[in-house]
Length: 127
Image 1 (spheres, rainbow, N blue to C red):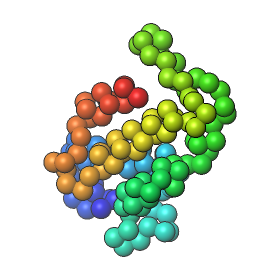
Image 2: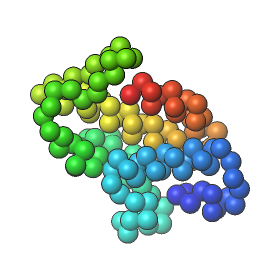
Image 3: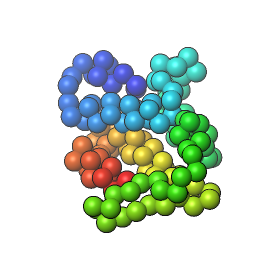
Image 4: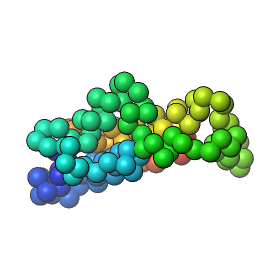
């Protein structure tokens, strides 16, 4: 599952989307698909899917959640929006949820269920 290109032996844009999704999950969870805790049918994607239902803090790299308490999370004044973090970090959590959801969507098992890269880029631009 995690080695789709190797298993299929073909290059395709859907395989690239899958790889991007796994990479995104790897970056934001700070866990590798080759981690020894993932074996057999239990994969990084499956771990994220199961843990994500309980709490995002169980999935996201703790270093990302320990941001300093600066008020501005993202300042895109030229695009017309300024996101501010409230005391609970709600905005940061919402952004992280959207990022993880994108990684999960890109790494769906069936290639036909995956987002296209244009859709991925459009979604990431909204974040």
